[in-house]
Amino acid sequence: MFVATLIAAGKLTDEVVREGIDRLAATGHDVGAPHWIDEHDAADIVFHGSLVSARKELALMDHGSLDIVVQPLGDRTKKLIIADMDSTMITVECIDELADYAGLKPQIAAITERAMRGELDFRAALEERVGLLAGMPETTLVDCRMERVRLTRGARTLVQTMKAHGAHSILISGGFTAFAGPVGEAIGFDKVVANELEIAGGKLTGKVREPIVDSKTKLETLKAEAAKHGLPLAETLAVGDGANDIPMITAAGLGIGYYPHPAAGEAAAAVIRHHDLTALLWAQGYPRRSWVLG
Image 1 (cartoon, one colour):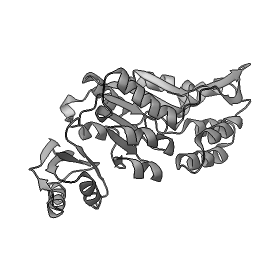
Image 2 (image 1 turned 60 degrees about the horizontal axis):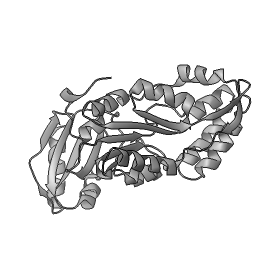
Image 3 (image 1 turned 45 degrees about the horizontal axis):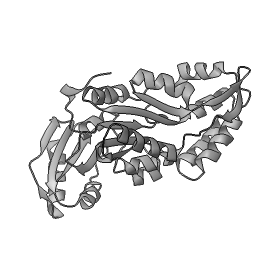
Image 4 (image 1 turned 45 degrees about the vertical axis):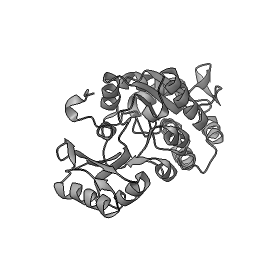
C-alpha cells in the first residue's frame, strides 16, 4: 500500500486532490478516499498499485505551487533524519559567502555550482576553493556566520517535531564546522558532522583537515547511525540539494531533494520545490497541531 501526499505552497483545492485521484485511477491504481492532513494545505491519497507508475503520473500534474511525495505507507513516520546544511538547512552556500569577503565570490561560486551539479569531483573542488581563501583571518568565519547565515524556513520546526516524536537527527555537511556547529545547535540536531578548516596564526591556511566529509561519508554516516539506533534504512529520511547528497538520498527510506540541482532531483524519491521544510512533516503524516514550532 502506498500514499501520495499533495502539499500546496498556496491553497490546496478539492479539485486538485480530485485530479490526483482521477489520474491514479485512470492508470490502474486502486484508490481510496482522500484524507486531509491539514485542510487546504496537505492531503493524503492512499492507493494500491505501482509506486513507479504513480510517481510518474502524478508528476504530470501542472500546478505551480504543488509538491507531491509518493511513498510506501508503512514506515512512513521516520525515526532518523540526516540533512545537508548549505542550501538545505540554511539559505546560503557558506563557502561562497566567505569568498565574497575575499572578493572572490563569482569565481568560487562557479566552482560550487559545478560541484553541486556533479560536474566536478567534490574533494578536488573543495580543496581548490579553500585554497583560494588562504590568508583569510579566522575572525571572518564568525563575521560571515553572523552576517550571512540564516536558517531555512521550517528547519527548526522539522527537526524539533521529529525529535519530539522519538526521532534521531544528524546534520552532515561538506561545509565547515565553524558554521555547522552553531547551525546544528540552533536547529537542535543531535549530532553534527562537517569539514574542519585548518587555521594557523589566526588565519586560514587554505587547507581542510582530514578526513574530508564527502558523499561517501554522508552515506556511511546514515548507515552507521541507523545501525547504532537499531533502525532499518526504511525508517530514515535524508534531505539535501546537491550531487554529493545523492548516495544518502537514494539509500534512505525517504530521500528528498530540497530545491535540488538537477542530478539530485532526478535521484530523489521526491522533491520539494515550492514549500518550506515543514513539507517533510506533512510527508510523514504529521498534522500542524502536532508540530513543535521553532
